[in-house]
Length: 185
Image (tube, rainbow, N blue to C red):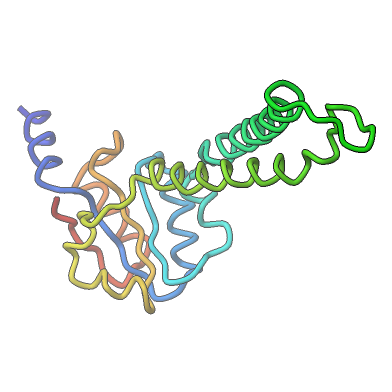
């Protein structure tokens, strides 16, 4: 019965959010929340806060690896295209140079590498960040509009295995926030 009540309360709640006036208390709260075992948490700030990504347990995503692989593929494709044009499709000897005169291929190789890497970076960033996302449950909190001006927020999501509405609220209140708010889905 208790498990059913806990599951029902988590469905009705996206999470709990604490508001802070300064970045230092937010950083300390994020570190403490992560050390207490909360893993599904996020922080919202009006400016970059040094060390916050590590404090909430953010890990690097695969965008950089995809961009690197796309750059190599673009370079190989550009070089292969130039080789195919100059040696196989339209062989033409100019000034006694060999058909495979690779220094002439460098600009096209570079441009193809940059083009494919840039497209992969933009598309990969959008896809892996779940963008565009015109709606997010944290937008339901009235004071959240201040996240882009002068407030710092820490949200612990109800999907976290360690989340319990009463215990998590008590934990957030111990961190001395300006206020603790419920985030509706």
